[in-house]
Amino acid sequence: MSYIYRLRPSNTLTLDEITNNYLWFSRPTEFKDVDDSNVMSFMEINETLGDALNRIFGHFMDVAKEVSKNGICCFTETLPSIEDWSKFPKGHNGIFIEYRKDILEDFFARHFGIGDCFKKVDYLLNPLYFKSSSNYDVLWKTNEDGELYISLKEFERNDRLRDELFLRMFTRINYKYQDQKELRIILGGRNIPDKSEGLSGYKIPIPKEAINMIYAHPKTPDTVISHLSYNYTERLTIAK
Image (cartoon, rainbow, N blue to C red; front, side, top):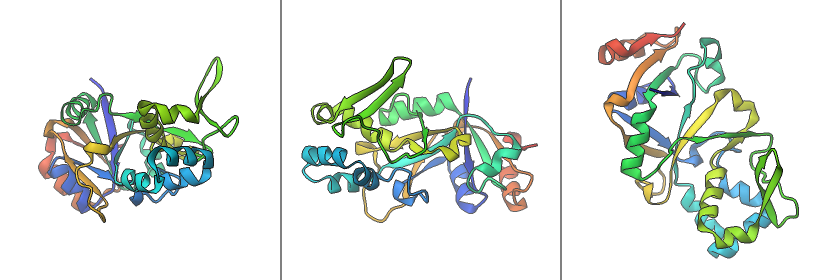
């Protein structure tokens, strides 16, 4: 049995998320890191790639507006030592929720058609920049055989490649965050639950049994500890 973890701040929104058994998926427009999932900046920095997508979609601005409504939920692969909690946003007194990975994978496969729902994040010096060898291609893969570049024309012809390109835009962040060992679930297209303007994200209900354990920081406020103790007596522990 494997587990996956999610750092949440010590506040009423986190308690609501746990008590009512849902995951909060943020729209990328809510991210404070301007290098994270900023589709318009991708197009501005990678000009020839932007031109190719304009040819495909007529005007990429409309597509950028649509994908900005995607929902992103962030996790980490391992429970960090208490000394490393501060490397996560609001981790100095937050809580880590330990989820049954298999239950979440099954849930998102059955209800959203997303197989292999946890996507690894790539940590890069310049996450908004796609390396190119000729201005008419992008670096797609690096392995023991060297670098593989894909022509921009391939994105015009291949729907699956375009989907993968957008996925990569949402899974590239600055290398300074590499200690977070992040994985993400991304909801896009028909899986976006509400495409209304002005929303900051979405509540996605999950099975209650998906939560295996809750780890609190020694500095987690007593009010939060009391609430968690009442609702998750046997599944709450103070990290050491």
